[in-house]
Length: 565
Image 1 (cartoon, helix red, strand yellow):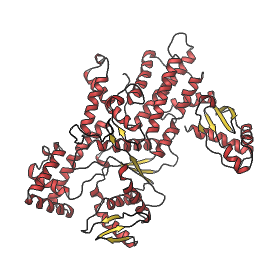
Image 2: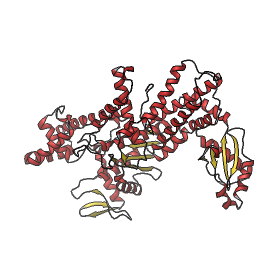
Image 3: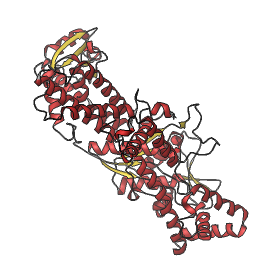
Image 4: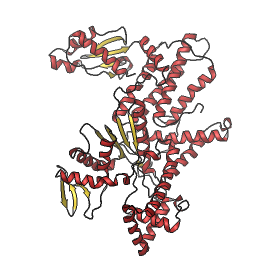
Protein backbone atom coordinates (compact mmCIF):
# COMPACT_ATOMS: atom_id res chain seq x y z
CA UNK A 1 0.00 0.00 0.00
CA UNK A 2 1.28 3.44 -0.92
CA UNK A 3 0.64 5.22 2.35
CA UNK A 4 1.60 8.70 1.15
CA UNK A 5 -0.81 8.39 -1.78
CA UNK A 6 -3.65 7.60 0.62
CA UNK A 7 -2.91 10.75 2.67
CA UNK A 8 -2.35 12.89 -0.43
CA UNK A 9 -5.80 11.84 -1.64
CA UNK A 10 -7.32 13.10 1.62
CA UNK A 11 -5.55 16.44 1.16
CA UNK A 12 -6.64 16.59 -2.46
CA UNK A 13 -10.28 16.08 -1.45
CA UNK A 14 -9.88 18.86 1.13
CA UNK A 15 -8.58 21.17 -1.62
CA UNK A 16 -11.63 20.39 -3.75
CA UNK A 17 -14.08 21.00 -0.89
CA UNK A 18 -12.26 24.24 0.03
CA UNK A 19 -12.51 25.49 -3.55
CA UNK A 20 -8.73 25.59 -4.00
CA UNK A 21 -8.05 24.85 -7.66
CA UNK A 22 -4.27 24.43 -7.41
CA UNK A 23 -2.70 20.99 -7.25
CA UNK A 24 -1.59 20.25 -3.66
CA UNK A 25 2.01 19.48 -2.75
CA UNK A 26 2.80 16.00 -1.46
CA UNK A 27 2.83 15.36 2.27
CA UNK A 28 6.10 14.42 3.98
CA UNK A 29 6.90 12.21 6.94
CA UNK A 30 6.94 14.13 10.23
CA UNK A 31 10.41 14.57 11.74
CA UNK A 32 9.21 14.14 15.35
CA UNK A 33 6.31 12.17 16.91
CA UNK A 34 4.83 15.35 18.41
CA UNK A 35 4.42 16.70 14.86
CA UNK A 36 2.14 13.80 13.96
CA UNK A 37 2.78 11.06 11.42
CA UNK A 38 2.91 13.31 8.35
CA UNK A 39 3.04 17.02 7.58
CA UNK A 40 1.56 19.12 4.81
CA UNK A 41 3.72 22.16 4.04
CA UNK A 42 2.03 23.47 0.90
CA UNK A 43 0.19 26.45 2.38
CA UNK A 44 3.28 28.68 2.21
CA UNK A 45 3.79 27.98 -1.50
CA UNK A 46 0.11 28.55 -2.19
CA UNK A 47 0.08 31.93 -0.40
CA UNK A 48 2.19 33.48 -3.17
CA UNK A 49 -0.04 32.04 -5.89
CA UNK A 50 -3.42 33.04 -4.49
CA UNK A 51 -2.42 36.02 -2.34
CA UNK A 52 -3.65 34.81 1.02
CA UNK A 53 -2.02 34.34 4.42
CA UNK A 54 -0.54 30.81 4.80
CA UNK A 55 -2.33 30.13 8.09
CA UNK A 56 -5.61 31.26 6.54
CA UNK A 57 -5.08 28.80 3.69
CA UNK A 58 -4.09 26.07 6.15
CA UNK A 59 -7.22 26.72 8.21
CA UNK A 60 -9.37 26.50 5.09
CA UNK A 61 -7.81 23.12 4.25
CA UNK A 62 -8.13 21.98 7.85
CA UNK A 63 -11.83 22.81 7.92
CA UNK A 64 -12.39 20.47 4.99
CA UNK A 65 -10.17 17.50 5.92
CA UNK A 66 -11.97 14.19 6.42
CA UNK A 67 -11.08 12.87 9.89
CA UNK A 68 -13.28 9.78 9.77
CA UNK A 69 -11.10 7.46 7.69
CA UNK A 70 -7.36 7.59 7.06
CA UNK A 71 -6.76 10.49 9.44
CA UNK A 72 -7.99 11.00 13.00
CA UNK A 73 -6.44 14.36 13.83
CA UNK A 74 -5.00 17.45 12.10
CA UNK A 75 -3.51 20.62 13.59
CA UNK A 76 -2.01 23.84 12.26
CA UNK A 77 1.52 24.60 13.42
CA UNK A 78 3.93 27.46 12.83
CA UNK A 79 3.35 29.75 9.83
CA UNK A 80 1.01 27.31 8.08
CA UNK A 81 2.13 23.70 8.48
CA UNK A 82 -0.56 21.06 8.99
CA UNK A 83 0.40 18.16 11.25
CA UNK A 84 -1.48 14.94 10.45
CA UNK A 85 -2.14 11.89 12.61
CA UNK A 86 -3.23 8.55 11.13
CA UNK A 87 -6.37 6.90 12.45
CA UNK A 88 -5.39 3.95 14.73
CA UNK A 89 -8.44 1.93 13.61
CA UNK A 90 -7.52 2.47 9.96
CA UNK A 91 -3.86 1.61 10.61
CA UNK A 92 -4.83 -1.64 12.32
CA UNK A 93 -7.13 -2.65 9.46
CA UNK A 94 -4.45 -1.89 6.86
CA UNK A 95 -1.85 -3.91 8.78
CA UNK A 96 -4.31 -6.80 8.99
CA UNK A 97 -4.83 -6.68 5.24
CA UNK A 98 -1.07 -6.59 4.63
CA UNK A 99 -0.50 -9.55 6.95
CA UNK A 100 -3.02 -11.68 5.06
CA UNK A 101 -1.48 -10.86 1.66
CA UNK A 102 1.58 -12.75 0.42
CA UNK A 103 2.85 -9.46 -1.04
CA UNK A 104 2.24 -7.63 2.27
CA UNK A 105 -0.29 -5.38 0.57
CA UNK A 106 2.26 -4.04 -1.88
CA UNK A 107 0.67 -3.44 -5.26
CA UNK A 108 2.04 -4.47 -8.64
CA UNK A 109 2.60 -1.55 -11.00
CA UNK A 110 -0.47 -0.61 -13.04
CA UNK A 111 1.72 0.30 -16.02
CA UNK A 112 4.79 -1.96 -15.88
CA UNK A 113 7.63 -1.38 -18.31
CA UNK A 114 10.50 -3.42 -19.71
CA UNK A 115 13.75 -2.62 -17.96
CA UNK A 116 17.22 -3.77 -18.95
CA UNK A 117 19.68 -3.93 -16.05
CA UNK A 118 23.27 -4.35 -17.23
CA UNK A 119 25.51 -5.51 -14.38
CA UNK A 120 28.45 -7.64 -13.22
CA UNK A 121 30.38 -7.60 -16.55
CA UNK A 122 33.34 -9.90 -15.77
CA UNK A 123 36.33 -10.13 -18.06
CA UNK A 124 36.66 -13.56 -19.61
CA UNK A 125 40.45 -13.45 -19.46
CA UNK A 126 40.56 -13.27 -15.67
CA UNK A 127 38.77 -14.59 -12.61
CA UNK A 128 36.27 -12.25 -10.97
CA UNK A 129 37.92 -9.95 -8.43
CA UNK A 130 36.64 -7.55 -5.78
CA UNK A 131 36.19 -4.88 -8.44
CA UNK A 132 33.22 -6.89 -9.76
CA UNK A 133 31.53 -7.17 -6.36
CA UNK A 134 29.69 -3.85 -6.26
CA UNK A 135 28.30 -4.00 -9.81
CA UNK A 136 27.08 -7.56 -9.23
CA UNK A 137 25.40 -6.87 -5.87
CA UNK A 138 23.91 -3.46 -6.68
CA UNK A 139 22.68 -4.57 -10.09
CA UNK A 140 21.08 -7.75 -8.81
CA UNK A 141 19.27 -5.86 -6.05
CA UNK A 142 17.89 -3.33 -8.54
CA UNK A 143 16.71 -6.16 -10.80
CA UNK A 144 15.09 -7.95 -7.83
CA UNK A 145 13.36 -4.76 -6.69
CA UNK A 146 11.95 -3.82 -10.09
CA UNK A 147 10.77 -7.40 -10.65
CA UNK A 148 8.99 -7.43 -7.28
CA UNK A 149 7.24 -4.15 -8.10
CA UNK A 150 5.98 -5.61 -11.39
CA UNK A 151 8.30 -4.43 -14.16
CA UNK A 152 9.52 -6.90 -16.78
CA UNK A 153 13.22 -7.00 -16.01
CA UNK A 154 15.78 -8.27 -18.49
CA UNK A 155 19.11 -9.00 -16.80
CA UNK A 156 22.11 -8.53 -19.05
CA UNK A 157 25.65 -9.64 -18.23
CA UNK A 158 27.81 -7.79 -20.77
CA UNK A 159 31.08 -9.74 -20.88
CA UNK A 160 34.25 -8.94 -22.78
CA UNK A 161 34.85 -11.93 -25.05
CA UNK A 162 36.10 -10.33 -28.25
CA UNK A 163 39.35 -8.69 -29.24
CA UNK A 164 43.04 -9.24 -29.88
CA UNK A 165 43.83 -10.88 -26.52
CA UNK A 166 41.61 -13.86 -27.35
CA UNK A 167 43.81 -14.94 -30.22
CA UNK A 168 46.66 -15.21 -27.73
CA UNK A 169 44.55 -17.04 -25.17
CA UNK A 170 43.09 -19.70 -27.45
CA UNK A 171 46.44 -20.30 -29.12
CA UNK A 172 47.94 -20.94 -25.69
CA UNK A 173 44.98 -23.12 -24.69
CA UNK A 174 45.54 -25.23 -27.80
CA UNK A 175 49.26 -25.53 -27.09
CA UNK A 176 48.99 -26.43 -23.40
CA UNK A 177 45.71 -28.19 -22.80
CA UNK A 178 43.00 -28.23 -25.43
CA UNK A 179 40.43 -29.56 -22.97
CA UNK A 180 41.06 -26.61 -20.69
CA UNK A 181 40.03 -28.40 -17.50
CA UNK A 182 43.53 -28.21 -16.01
CA UNK A 183 45.02 -25.04 -17.46
CA UNK A 184 42.04 -22.81 -16.73
CA UNK A 185 41.62 -23.66 -13.07
CA UNK A 186 43.58 -20.49 -12.34
CA UNK A 187 42.65 -17.94 -15.00
CA UNK A 188 45.03 -15.32 -13.62
CA UNK A 189 48.02 -17.61 -14.00
CA UNK A 190 46.83 -18.83 -17.39
CA UNK A 191 46.67 -15.26 -18.68
CA UNK A 192 50.15 -14.46 -17.33
CA UNK A 193 51.61 -17.60 -18.91
CA UNK A 194 49.96 -16.88 -22.27
CA UNK A 195 51.23 -13.29 -22.22
CA UNK A 196 54.72 -14.51 -21.33
CA UNK A 197 54.71 -16.91 -24.30
CA UNK A 198 53.38 -14.16 -26.57
CA UNK A 199 56.18 -11.77 -25.58
CA UNK A 200 58.97 -14.38 -25.75
CA UNK A 201 58.02 -16.46 -28.79
CA UNK A 202 57.68 -14.70 -32.14
CA UNK A 203 56.18 -17.76 -33.83
CA UNK A 204 53.55 -18.05 -31.12
CA UNK A 205 52.78 -14.33 -31.34
CA UNK A 206 52.25 -14.60 -35.10
CA UNK A 207 49.99 -17.59 -34.62
CA UNK A 208 47.96 -15.68 -31.99
CA UNK A 209 47.48 -12.79 -34.41
CA UNK A 210 46.37 -15.21 -37.12
CA UNK A 211 43.87 -16.71 -34.68
CA UNK A 212 42.31 -13.30 -34.05
CA UNK A 213 41.58 -12.99 -37.77
CA UNK A 214 40.33 -16.57 -37.91
CA UNK A 215 37.96 -16.02 -34.97
CA UNK A 216 36.51 -12.92 -36.60
CA UNK A 217 36.16 -14.69 -39.96
CA UNK A 218 34.34 -17.66 -38.41
CA UNK A 219 37.02 -20.37 -38.55
CA UNK A 220 35.42 -23.47 -37.00
CA UNK A 221 38.54 -24.75 -35.18
CA UNK A 222 39.37 -21.38 -33.61
CA UNK A 223 35.76 -20.70 -32.69
CA UNK A 224 35.61 -24.10 -30.99
CA UNK A 225 38.67 -23.26 -28.87
CA UNK A 226 37.29 -19.79 -28.18
CA UNK A 227 33.94 -21.24 -27.03
CA UNK A 228 35.70 -23.68 -24.68
CA UNK A 229 37.61 -20.81 -23.13
CA UNK A 230 34.42 -18.77 -22.69
CA UNK A 231 32.48 -21.72 -21.22
CA UNK A 232 35.16 -22.49 -18.64
CA UNK A 233 35.55 -18.82 -17.77
CA UNK A 234 31.80 -18.45 -17.28
CA UNK A 235 31.88 -21.52 -15.06
CA UNK A 236 34.16 -19.60 -12.68
CA UNK A 237 31.68 -16.70 -12.69
CA UNK A 238 28.73 -18.96 -12.01
CA UNK A 239 30.49 -20.36 -8.95
CA UNK A 240 30.75 -16.79 -7.61
CA UNK A 241 27.11 -16.02 -8.47
CA UNK A 242 25.96 -19.13 -6.63
CA UNK A 243 27.89 -18.14 -3.49
CA UNK A 244 26.56 -14.59 -3.69
CA UNK A 245 22.95 -15.75 -4.19
CA UNK A 246 22.80 -13.64 -7.35
CA UNK A 247 20.23 -14.27 -10.08
CA UNK A 248 22.50 -14.25 -13.13
CA UNK A 249 22.53 -17.27 -15.44
CA UNK A 250 24.18 -18.26 -18.71
CA UNK A 251 21.03 -17.10 -20.52
CA UNK A 252 21.61 -13.55 -19.26
CA UNK A 253 25.01 -13.26 -20.93
CA UNK A 254 25.16 -10.80 -23.79
CA UNK A 255 28.80 -10.66 -24.78
CA UNK A 256 30.60 -8.19 -27.00
CA UNK A 257 30.60 -10.82 -29.74
CA UNK A 258 26.79 -10.81 -29.71
CA UNK A 259 26.81 -7.31 -31.23
CA UNK A 260 29.69 -7.90 -33.64
CA UNK A 261 27.58 -7.96 -36.81
CA UNK A 262 25.88 -4.68 -35.85
CA UNK A 263 29.08 -2.63 -35.49
CA UNK A 264 29.46 -1.71 -39.19
CA UNK A 265 25.79 -0.67 -39.19
CA UNK A 266 26.42 1.71 -36.27
CA UNK A 267 29.13 3.45 -38.23
CA UNK A 268 26.97 3.47 -41.36
CA UNK A 269 24.03 5.10 -39.55
CA UNK A 270 26.26 7.78 -38.06
CA UNK A 271 27.82 8.42 -41.46
CA UNK A 272 24.41 8.71 -43.15
CA UNK A 273 23.37 11.29 -40.55
CA UNK A 274 26.49 13.30 -41.28
CA UNK A 275 27.72 13.19 -37.70
CA UNK A 276 31.03 11.43 -38.39
CA UNK A 277 34.30 13.29 -38.78
CA UNK A 278 37.70 11.81 -39.53
CA UNK A 279 40.45 12.58 -37.03
CA UNK A 280 43.92 11.02 -37.40
CA UNK A 281 42.35 8.33 -39.57
CA UNK A 282 39.66 7.45 -37.00
CA UNK A 283 35.92 7.97 -37.43
CA UNK A 284 34.65 10.18 -34.61
CA UNK A 285 31.55 11.95 -33.34
CA UNK A 286 32.30 15.42 -31.97
CA UNK A 287 29.68 16.49 -29.43
CA UNK A 288 29.05 20.14 -28.82
CA UNK A 289 30.68 21.20 -25.57
CA UNK A 290 32.98 18.15 -25.36
CA UNK A 291 36.64 18.46 -26.30
CA UNK A 292 37.21 14.71 -26.52
CA UNK A 293 35.33 13.00 -29.38
CA UNK A 294 33.54 9.65 -29.32
CA UNK A 295 35.67 7.33 -31.47
CA UNK A 296 33.56 4.63 -33.15
CA UNK A 297 36.11 3.20 -35.60
CA UNK A 298 39.90 3.25 -35.49
CA UNK A 299 42.06 4.04 -38.48
CA UNK A 300 42.80 0.33 -39.00
CA UNK A 301 39.07 -0.44 -39.18
CA UNK A 302 38.76 -1.78 -35.64
CA UNK A 303 35.88 -0.85 -33.33
CA UNK A 304 35.85 0.42 -29.77
CA UNK A 305 33.78 0.04 -26.60
CA UNK A 306 31.63 3.00 -27.63
CA UNK A 307 30.65 1.26 -30.87
CA UNK A 308 29.60 -1.90 -29.04
CA UNK A 309 27.69 0.13 -26.45
CA UNK A 310 25.79 1.98 -29.18
CA UNK A 311 24.89 -1.33 -30.83
CA UNK A 312 23.76 -2.71 -27.46
CA UNK A 313 21.62 0.37 -26.78
CA UNK A 314 19.93 0.02 -30.16
CA UNK A 315 19.28 -3.68 -29.55
CA UNK A 316 17.90 -3.13 -26.06
CA UNK A 317 15.61 -0.28 -27.07
CA UNK A 318 14.41 -1.46 -30.47
CA UNK A 319 14.58 -5.26 -30.31
CA UNK A 320 13.93 -5.89 -26.61
CA UNK A 321 11.61 -2.89 -26.28
CA UNK A 322 13.12 -1.57 -23.04
CA UNK A 323 11.86 1.76 -21.72
CA UNK A 324 14.52 2.00 -19.03
CA UNK A 325 18.12 0.88 -19.55
CA UNK A 326 20.30 0.88 -16.44
CA UNK A 327 24.07 0.38 -16.54
CA UNK A 328 25.47 -0.56 -13.12
CA UNK A 329 29.07 0.41 -13.72
CA UNK A 330 31.95 2.04 -11.83
CA UNK A 331 31.63 5.83 -11.40
CA UNK A 332 34.91 6.29 -13.29
CA UNK A 333 33.00 5.45 -16.49
CA UNK A 334 30.63 8.41 -16.06
CA UNK A 335 32.16 10.41 -18.90
CA UNK A 336 31.98 7.47 -21.30
CA UNK A 337 28.30 6.79 -20.63
CA UNK A 338 27.35 10.44 -20.76
CA UNK A 339 28.80 10.65 -24.27
CA UNK A 340 27.43 7.32 -25.48
CA UNK A 341 23.92 8.08 -24.20
CA UNK A 342 23.98 11.44 -25.92
CA UNK A 343 25.13 9.97 -29.24
CA UNK A 344 22.50 7.22 -28.96
CA UNK A 345 19.68 9.74 -28.52
CA UNK A 346 20.91 12.26 -31.11
CA UNK A 347 21.51 9.55 -33.74
CA UNK A 348 18.16 7.90 -33.11
CA UNK A 349 19.52 4.56 -31.88
CA UNK A 350 17.29 5.04 -28.82
CA UNK A 351 13.89 6.80 -28.82
CA UNK A 352 13.52 9.93 -26.70
CA UNK A 353 11.06 8.29 -24.30
CA UNK A 354 13.58 5.62 -23.23
CA UNK A 355 15.34 6.38 -19.94
CA UNK A 356 19.09 5.79 -20.07
CA UNK A 357 20.91 5.84 -16.76
CA UNK A 358 24.36 5.12 -15.44
CA UNK A 359 23.98 3.59 -11.96
CA UNK A 360 27.39 4.72 -10.76
CA UNK A 361 29.16 3.42 -7.68
CA UNK A 362 32.37 4.22 -5.81
CA UNK A 363 35.54 2.22 -5.27
CA UNK A 364 36.02 -0.56 -2.73
CA UNK A 365 38.60 0.51 -0.15
CA UNK A 366 40.35 -1.04 2.85
CA UNK A 367 40.11 0.35 6.40
CA UNK A 368 43.00 2.69 5.63
CA UNK A 369 41.10 4.28 2.77
CA UNK A 370 43.26 2.71 0.05
CA UNK A 371 42.08 0.49 -2.85
CA UNK A 372 41.36 -3.02 -1.58
CA UNK A 373 44.36 -5.25 -2.36
CA UNK A 374 46.08 -8.40 -1.12
CA UNK A 375 49.02 -8.04 1.28
CA UNK A 376 51.46 -8.23 -1.60
CA UNK A 377 49.53 -5.60 -3.55
CA UNK A 378 47.72 -7.99 -5.89
CA UNK A 379 44.05 -8.06 -6.83
CA UNK A 380 41.81 -9.95 -4.40
CA UNK A 381 39.88 -12.75 -6.09
CA UNK A 382 36.19 -12.49 -5.31
CA UNK A 383 35.80 -16.20 -4.63
CA UNK A 384 38.56 -16.00 -1.99
CA UNK A 385 36.92 -13.01 -0.32
CA UNK A 386 33.57 -14.82 -0.09
CA UNK A 387 35.20 -17.96 1.31
CA UNK A 388 36.90 -15.82 3.95
CA UNK A 389 33.55 -14.23 4.82
CA UNK A 390 32.09 -17.66 5.56
CA UNK A 391 35.08 -18.62 7.73
CA UNK A 392 34.83 -15.39 9.74
CA UNK A 393 31.06 -15.75 10.07
CA UNK A 394 31.50 -19.21 11.57
CA UNK A 395 33.56 -17.60 14.34
CA UNK A 396 30.59 -15.40 15.31
CA UNK A 397 28.20 -18.32 15.85
CA UNK A 398 27.69 -19.01 19.53
CA UNK A 399 26.41 -22.29 20.98
CA UNK A 400 27.62 -24.35 18.02
CA UNK A 401 26.63 -27.46 19.98
CA UNK A 402 23.00 -26.54 19.24
CA UNK A 403 23.56 -27.25 15.56
CA UNK A 404 24.82 -30.10 13.42
CA UNK A 405 28.09 -29.42 11.53
CA UNK A 406 26.05 -29.11 8.32
CA UNK A 407 23.77 -26.55 9.96
CA UNK A 408 26.76 -24.55 11.20
CA UNK A 409 28.19 -24.49 7.67
CA UNK A 410 24.88 -23.33 6.17
CA UNK A 411 24.38 -20.72 8.90
CA UNK A 412 27.92 -19.39 8.37
CA UNK A 413 27.31 -19.12 4.63
CA UNK A 414 24.09 -17.14 5.12
CA UNK A 415 25.65 -14.85 7.73
CA UNK A 416 28.96 -14.32 5.93
CA UNK A 417 27.63 -13.68 2.42
CA UNK A 418 24.77 -11.60 3.83
CA UNK A 419 27.25 -9.48 5.77
CA UNK A 420 29.33 -8.70 2.68
CA UNK A 421 26.30 -7.83 0.57
CA UNK A 422 24.48 -5.77 3.19
CA UNK A 423 27.56 -3.70 4.07
CA UNK A 424 27.82 -2.68 0.41
CA UNK A 425 24.11 -2.04 -0.11
CA UNK A 426 23.76 -0.03 3.12
CA UNK A 427 25.86 2.90 1.92
CA UNK A 428 25.15 5.52 -0.71
CA UNK A 429 26.29 3.65 -3.82
CA UNK A 430 28.25 6.65 -5.13
CA UNK A 431 30.39 6.69 -1.98
CA UNK A 432 33.53 4.62 -1.70
CA UNK A 433 32.92 1.34 0.13
CA UNK A 434 35.19 0.87 3.17
CA UNK A 435 35.58 -2.88 3.67
CA UNK A 436 35.69 -3.71 7.40
CA UNK A 437 35.16 -7.26 8.64
CA UNK A 438 34.56 -6.26 12.29
CA UNK A 439 31.87 -3.73 11.37
CA UNK A 440 30.00 -5.91 8.88
CA UNK A 441 29.92 -8.94 11.21
CA UNK A 442 28.71 -6.96 14.21
CA UNK A 443 25.39 -7.61 15.98
CA UNK A 444 25.12 -3.85 16.53
CA UNK A 445 24.35 -1.08 14.07
CA UNK A 446 23.00 -1.23 10.54
CA UNK A 447 24.34 -4.67 9.61
CA UNK A 448 22.92 -7.81 8.07
CA UNK A 449 23.54 -9.69 11.30
CA UNK A 450 21.41 -7.18 13.23
CA UNK A 451 18.56 -7.66 10.72
CA UNK A 452 18.86 -11.46 10.92
CA UNK A 453 18.97 -11.31 14.71
CA UNK A 454 15.77 -9.23 14.74
CA UNK A 455 14.05 -11.75 12.47
CA UNK A 456 15.30 -14.74 14.50
CA UNK A 457 14.13 -13.11 17.72
CA UNK A 458 10.58 -12.87 16.38
CA UNK A 459 10.70 -16.52 15.30
CA UNK A 460 11.71 -17.48 18.84
CA UNK A 461 8.53 -15.78 20.09
CA UNK A 462 6.41 -17.97 17.82
CA UNK A 463 8.31 -21.12 18.82
CA UNK A 464 7.60 -20.31 22.46
CA UNK A 465 3.91 -19.49 21.82
CA UNK A 466 3.32 -22.42 19.45
CA UNK A 467 -0.46 -21.98 19.04
CA UNK A 468 -2.88 -20.47 16.51
CA UNK A 469 -2.98 -16.66 16.30
CA UNK A 470 -6.44 -15.16 15.87
CA UNK A 471 -8.15 -11.81 16.23
CA UNK A 472 -7.58 -8.30 14.90
CA UNK A 473 -4.64 -5.92 15.09
CA UNK A 474 -5.52 -3.26 17.63
CA UNK A 475 -3.33 -0.17 17.89
CA UNK A 476 -3.01 0.69 21.56
CA UNK A 477 -0.19 2.97 22.67
CA UNK A 478 2.07 5.39 20.78
CA UNK A 479 4.80 2.78 20.24
CA UNK A 480 2.39 0.36 18.57
CA UNK A 481 1.14 3.27 16.48
CA UNK A 482 4.70 4.08 15.32
CA UNK A 483 5.54 0.44 14.55
CA UNK A 484 2.35 -0.13 12.56
CA UNK A 485 2.85 3.12 10.63
CA UNK A 486 6.43 2.13 9.85
CA UNK A 487 5.23 -1.22 8.48
CA UNK A 488 2.73 0.53 6.20
CA UNK A 489 5.49 2.73 4.76
CA UNK A 490 7.28 -0.24 3.17
CA UNK A 491 5.84 0.21 -0.32
CA UNK A 492 6.69 3.93 -0.38
CA UNK A 493 10.29 3.06 0.53
CA UNK A 494 10.54 0.42 -2.21
CA UNK A 495 9.04 2.77 -4.79
CA UNK A 496 11.53 5.54 -3.98
CA UNK A 497 14.44 3.08 -4.00
CA UNK A 498 13.36 1.83 -7.44
CA UNK A 499 13.26 5.33 -8.93
CA UNK A 500 16.60 6.34 -7.43
CA UNK A 501 18.25 2.90 -7.81
CA UNK A 502 19.36 3.30 -4.21
CA UNK A 503 19.37 0.15 -2.09
CA UNK A 504 20.49 2.11 0.98
CA UNK A 505 16.94 3.48 1.29
CA UNK A 506 15.80 -0.11 1.87
CA UNK A 507 18.56 -0.91 4.38
CA UNK A 508 17.93 2.32 6.29
CA UNK A 509 14.23 1.43 6.50
CA UNK A 510 14.99 -2.10 7.70
CA UNK A 511 17.39 -0.81 10.34
CA UNK A 512 14.81 1.66 11.66
CA UNK A 513 12.11 -1.02 11.59
CA UNK A 514 14.16 -3.58 13.54
CA UNK A 515 15.31 -0.94 16.03
CA UNK A 516 11.72 0.17 16.57
CA UNK A 517 10.55 -3.43 16.98
CA UNK A 518 13.24 -4.05 19.62
CA UNK A 519 11.85 -1.12 21.61
CA UNK A 520 8.31 -2.42 21.11
CA UNK A 521 9.38 -5.89 22.27
CA UNK A 522 10.98 -4.50 25.44
CA UNK A 523 8.21 -2.08 26.38
CA UNK A 524 5.12 -3.97 25.18
CA UNK A 525 5.27 -7.55 26.56
CA UNK A 526 3.84 -10.13 24.18
CA UNK A 527 3.78 -13.44 26.05
CA UNK A 528 4.07 -12.19 29.62
CA UNK A 529 1.44 -13.52 32.01
CA UNK A 530 -1.52 -11.31 32.74
CA UNK A 531 -1.64 -9.76 29.27
CA UNK A 532 -5.15 -9.43 27.88
CA UNK A 533 -5.70 -12.16 25.25
CA UNK A 534 -6.92 -9.66 22.65
CA UNK A 535 -3.81 -7.50 23.16
CA UNK A 536 -1.54 -10.57 23.03
CA UNK A 537 -3.01 -11.66 19.70
CA UNK A 538 -2.68 -8.17 18.26
CA UNK A 539 0.96 -7.90 19.30
CA UNK A 540 1.75 -11.35 17.94
CA UNK A 541 0.31 -10.31 14.59
CA UNK A 542 2.29 -7.06 14.57
CA UNK A 543 5.41 -9.13 15.31
CA UNK A 544 4.50 -11.49 12.46
CA UNK A 545 4.04 -8.63 10.00
CA UNK A 546 7.37 -7.18 11.13
CA UNK A 547 9.13 -10.50 10.49
CA UNK A 548 7.56 -10.86 7.05
CA UNK A 549 8.58 -7.32 6.16
CA UNK A 550 12.18 -7.93 7.25
CA UNK A 551 12.27 -11.16 5.25
CA UNK A 552 10.82 -9.51 2.13
CA UNK A 553 13.23 -6.59 2.38
CA UNK A 554 16.26 -8.86 2.75
CA UNK A 555 15.00 -11.08 -0.06
CA UNK A 556 15.02 -8.09 -2.42
CA UNK A 557 18.61 -7.47 -1.32
CA UNK A 558 19.43 -11.11 -2.12
CA UNK A 559 20.05 -11.98 1.55
CA UNK A 560 18.59 -15.01 3.31
CA UNK A 561 17.16 -15.06 6.84
CA UNK A 562 17.70 -17.56 9.64
CA UNK A 563 15.02 -18.75 12.07
CA UNK A 564 17.47 -19.24 14.92
CA UNK A 565 20.62 -17.33 15.79
